[in-house]
Image (cartoon, rainbow, N blue to C red; front, side):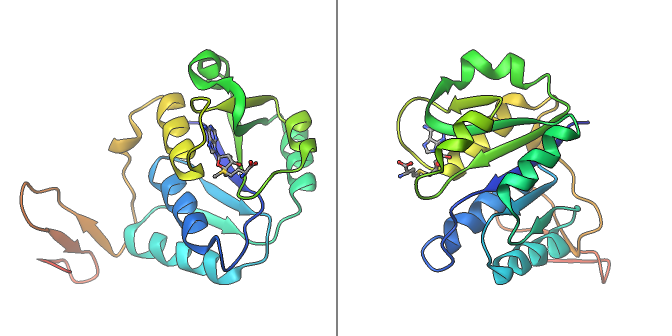
Length: 183
Ligand SMILES: C[S@@+](CC[C@H](N)C(=O)[O-])C[C@H]1O[C@@H](n2cnc3c(N)ncnc32)[C@H](O)[C@@H]1O
């Protein structure tokens, strides 16, 4: 089992609230264990924790981390660092190497990232060399490096569980052991 964390740089609490939330939710859904937020936005961390409480799993968000210290600590523990940037080596050409890492930190920016990140990273990787979104970059990377299909991930301990259905919504409320539908 790989240990994967996302390091989110440059989050601006008002402007990036929605996209950083989506980075966290996408990372959670696709198998990362947590997100380190290198900005101070405790509300955002609370919102993502609420999702985990409702839908299961142990995903965590650590607010207001010092990114340099986190990268240093991660590397001291034998972890590797993959910085996602459209300027990097294209993912298909790096995926076999990255997949070997047992501990992987995936770094994504918002505004321009400090150049030091390019030097500290073990890999600077592009998810295609065109500009798009950090949410897409995280999703595609986690999917490509996964050992088992991340869409089959199970999340235990949540209040609610979705039962996939061809039409409509089926949700089990694990607190009541009753099946119903929610909007
Ligand atoms: C929307 S971009 C903005 C980048 C910023 N304007 C700049 O020029 O440095 C925010 C983040 O999305 C990620 N990103 C965007 N396109 C990417 C791509 N093609 N491959 C990998 N990551 C990408 C990078 O992590 C980037 O820091």
